[in-house]
Image 1 (cartoon, rainbow, N blue to C red):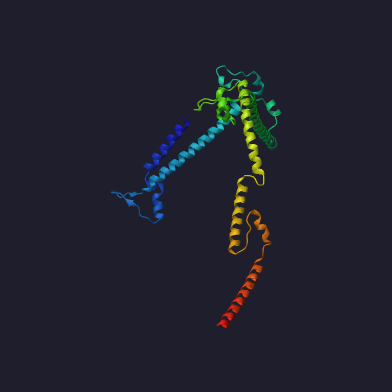
Image 2 (cartoon, one colour):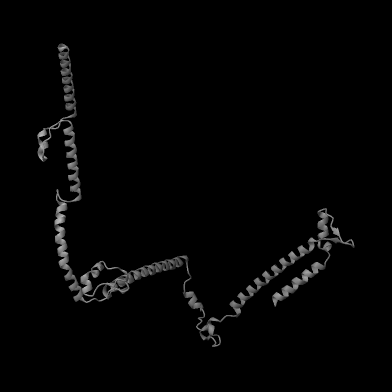
Length: 314
């Protein structure tokens, strides 16, 4: 009702201002103060095109001001009614009962002056203490959730150890699966299928497993007996390993090349494996060069004497 009256008043003010000549509203005085000449219509009346725009803006501001004033006054009235009119006296509070038709007010506790005075007002210290309690409660809740997750993981591991996990048995390959592909496993009817479509049953008979393991023991003993001599030969210094064979071939090649070089030099090389023991110690390069120089001098001297003998015979 009040808003409708406000709208009517604003419309009336706007209509009155638009019907009033702009010169009477002060536009002519402002034009004279600004030394401007306004345009005129066919009858010679001055025209002010900015008048309508300013009137509309002013009416809008007036409407906003009236609505804010009305709202503020109604808020004051509401507060007054709630505090002084729509209230229950303290002596009548115990006798007040909520009507059954007002179901949304069931269980409403009306405040009493004596009870409200006994409860202390919240202080910054009490609010801070409550915040700390909430933070500690959240930390405890997070710790309990983490402990619950650890306990669930532990229980899951224990159940898998006690009852067995069929899914893990299907997905994880057995480390001894190669034993089930042997001929003894096929004879005992415990071999795995070739297409891999099915796996061994969950609970295998203990007697069959024991018999299969015992049947494989002689073959394992025979393999071990064959491997022991080979392992001993590989570990010996002159064994048949690949390293010793390479060293023997290298030694034979070096000895052969040494004999060939010594034969070219005219040295007497004995036959047999022990022939090289009578050669004496190895000569140093300086000694070899010295002996070659002496041999050269002796050769030149002999050549000179033979030349003199030939001249004398002639």
